[in-house]
Length: 179
Image (cartoon, rainbow, N blue to C red; front, side, top):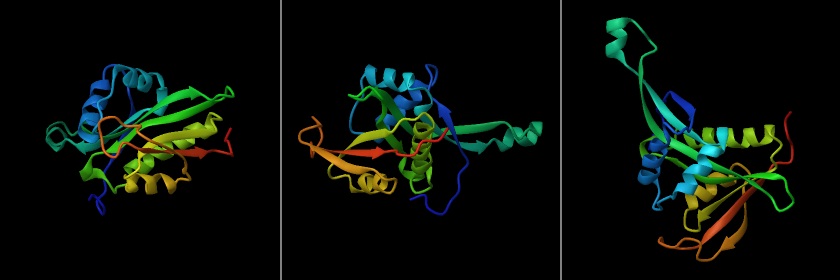
């Protein structure tokens, strides 16, 4: 929908003072309501959870005060992750949610968010990233496959209140790590 236009965005960390933005975004994006543990996990994941803001210059203040630094921003997307330990003891990243508001899709925002998590995982010697995707969400499945994620399992009746209730487990193994 947004293909062809450019937007100026910033990736911002999620903190206690802005976690409500993540809650509102999730309500707009997903058919699932997330509990307090989801938000606690997102807050504790540090740089792995990000909000995306479109930066819009405030031309009224620019003209009045000649300051290009005064801007409005709109929260348009997010990625929320949880850091876990694998059975063998090493760390892995679980992508709990990744979403972008419809008018901002196709502008590379989801790509920027996912690349951020992949790069950060690589720098921190985390070799596995995984997530769940509803089996009928072909757009999401194809998106993740472009980044090297593979379907590693099918889980029947994973979702309770949405149809279909089944999901795929998608996993990306990072073999090269950066120092």
